[in-house]
Length: 91
Image (cartoon, rainbow, N blue to C red; front, side, top):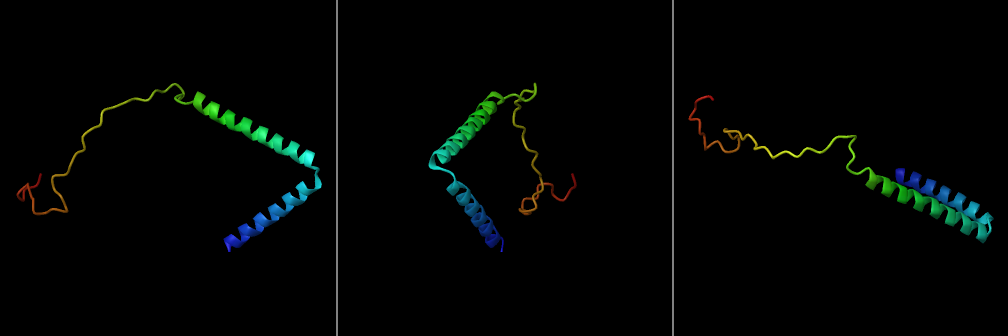
């Protein structure tokens, strides 16, 4: 059901776009295409450059590097009950 709805929306948008583009001359179509290409390329370059420029800037905070801490392991293992090291005494 969702697939059919999406297909109808795509067909509707495709029909409207073809009808709109069919009315303009090839020269105007080329101008629209080049304008869109220029706009999206400028937006892409802006996003890329601003991402690189802001990389590492965490509003004055720096990344603190710490050593890896050892994990506290349980002495009692629920899987291997044969190795009962506490000999029945509570710890």
